[in-house]
Image 1 (tube, rainbow, N blue to C red):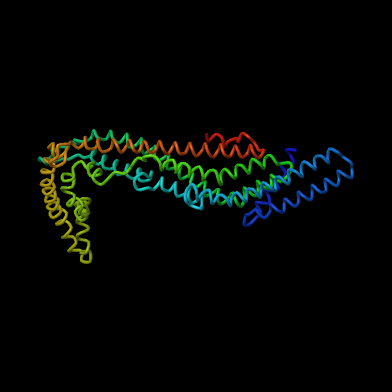
Image 2 (cartoon, helix red, strand yellow):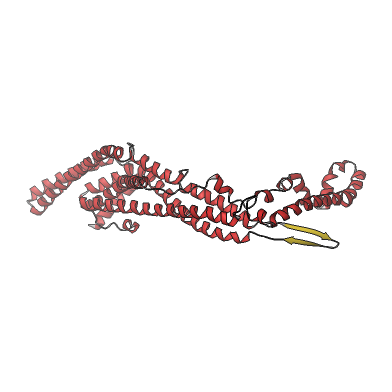
Length: 408
């Protein structure tokens, strides 16, 4: 019997592989007609041979055949009723679109979306990292050596990155799960109506694979109907709770700046591309670049090159160092004062305290949002798997869905 089932499934798979485009729904009436003809032939053979076992088997299969046809008609009618049910629950006739809108809102909402939380964590971590690596320095040349003074007054704030990293991991897991759920629903919406559900109908009509067909029908209905409706139910549950806000406001982000004035005091000078390019060259490279147009007259190039490399370039570098020294002294004085390095200008609250007061409620809200996401996924999995298993049991299919029930 199992060899016959394997052969039937193999023939169906071979037929699918040569179909272009793939749409098995027209094959369902054809298979129903073939099975009906075979049952009629078996009935006639039973009457002719006066075989009571064959006659009883044919009568049973006739009843199951009629039940399969009724089941298929009921399922088609049920899809028509689903629009009304979706309208009642979500206000939208397309239940799949309603489920997709709920997932998109959970991901991209501007105040409580997971993508919003991820973006704000990146901004916060960048601000903290800039402050933690903030290190004013001063170099004073003394004959053949130089004296350098450097400090990193806010390096201890890097401990806050641990909490942000943990929150990022939880957010990444939830985002991946919901993106996968969204892709799964769209995949099932395309594949189930044209391939999987017709294949399940065909397997259900065939007498020897009736139980497998009932299980396949339940799985198709679970993925096509129960899964989107479970997402809609989870969205309705979320709408009645106080959802955590995971967005940092502009003022909160500004509080993460360690020292705007001191850290940007010389940014205009350091950001000049010509100056940065000159600093990146050595004396020979700078001289070769300046004297390059004089290559047309070799004597002029020979006179220009040593003049620029030995006289002009050292003068330029000395001037730049003086400018840097003039900018570094007030910058260093500002940074080393309590007002400059640790607090806002004219404020009593120190910068580390402002960072902690800003990030603590934000991280708590992110943690609550991640927890709600896990609870939603558990609710969706329980509803989908339990509903699918109930349909399978009611239709006479398998009660235990191997592999699927591992979701819960």
